[in-house]
Image 1 (tube, rainbow, N blue to C red):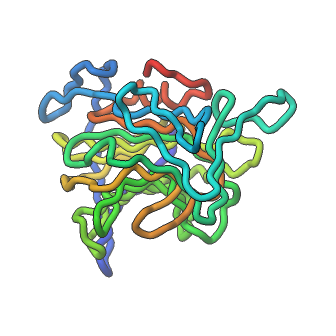
Image 2 (cartoon, rainbow, N blue to C red):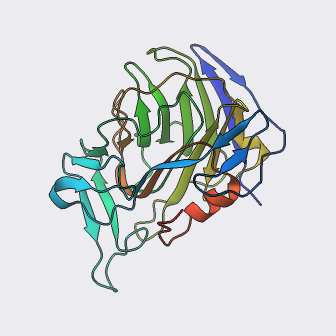
Length: 273
């Protein structure tokens, strides 16, 4: 059975639950082809795919020829598995290792702006479930994160949150994974996390391990544009450094449908996706 999720609109001092129970779009599509939403046609364009297999000179390349690379910061490093009896990488032979103490990777500018439809995804494994909130991916503005995917210490669960304005105290739209706990097994494969913002349909969708239910969509009319680069392993606004492993980071302009998200969650890299 698919996991259940909670969508919450959090304002200062108040919490309002908002659920969208309508049917989700299910038509398959490929990168660059049109995909129909309930409101209008949008296209899907891959802006970034970082398999994190290597980082020569501290730069993890983007598979997209003209795409922005990820620059490693702090003590962030790329682990590469050479020994079949050693610690395997999350996907394929390499992944990004972060110690939670000022380590992260980032692009120099936002690969997707956030003022229209977008899709962000990554596989992540916590080193330990503890009392620190830890961010996997985020897109910052000046005073708030346009979107953030993180482990929320207060609930002990994965969540995605968007700030409705680029203001420090602006309300947030939040979707929390309700049942399955984050995988912090040091030899496990972690969890695949993906967020889709469907601007024409005014929906935010959160997939965990390729799964989505009607309860994992939230009404969202947010449309402001991120001004900072994609952050892997932290929030540029609040810190919340990630301690663990990250792999297979992806960014698309447009809406990826459930079939494509399921393919992204594969334990083998799919460079053509």
